[in-house]
Image (cartoon, rainbow, N blue to C red):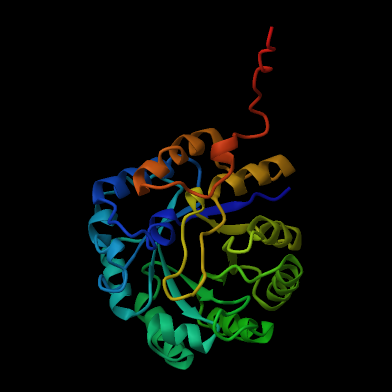
Amino acid sequence: MSRIFFNEVVTRDGLQMEPAFIPTDTKVALVDALSVCGYAKIEVTSFTSAKAIPMLRDAEEVMGRIRRVPGVEYAVLMPNLRGAERALESRADELNLVMSCSESHNQANLRMSRAQSFASLTEVTRVVDGHAAVNVSLSTAFGCPMEGAVLAATVLDLAQRFAGLGVRGVTVCDTTGMANPGQVRALCEALQRALPASLQLTLHFHNTRGMGLANLLAAVQSGVVRFDVSLGGLGGCPYAPGASGNIASEDAVHMQQLIGYPTGVDLERLLGVARGLSTIVGHDVPAQVTKAGPVWQLHPSPCQAP
């Protein structure tokens, strides 16, 4: 079976919705702990407006202090040219650009039209010009909470246009958990037919309606091997009404290992990190395997009453 490559996004997507600022030292320690778990990539932070996402206002300091482990890529998200310039200065391995497939969400999230976003991101790819890898995340690819259905043709068109600009990868995002497995499989198959085989196609699912892992499995069965996941199932979009957390890293890794797909992730080590996450954020987290343990973790028989 093909290896599944997991990209950890908890310190960016996961923390951006938290109400209380997580100290910089804690973020750095969390990235360092995740770096030795076997991930292909860690999306560390976002170079966006501190006013818009105050939780990530320490992006430069976090990127400057993490211990970089060989074999792990350290990515950052940004919406515009200024963010890209800051990201390059931080020595990010990958710049993750973002725009939405729906006009309403793009206006809410980025304060510009889709046409303006595409023009802006085209300029970013020109400026980056090989100094770092470029990935483009297409939000609301499976549905928009303000507009409803998003046509597969819209997603395909944007993905092909960015592929034509020479980006290394495209991430297709179910921003508010509106996808279903049949829809996922159909779109993944269409994208793989339409895009160059060399382009890295990644799927990003939220578990808003409880279908995150089912959608991941549908994508795997269609041939996709790259996925964003978030420790504990944290995350959400501040500009997408009703959005809840991403699929939990530990749950996704556990499922793929049971099926037989290699992931490169040390689940026991990852669970050790995950068990401390609720203390970091100050509340319970949605992930299940951290609470119940993997299926191979057995327990003694309950004592019988005399």
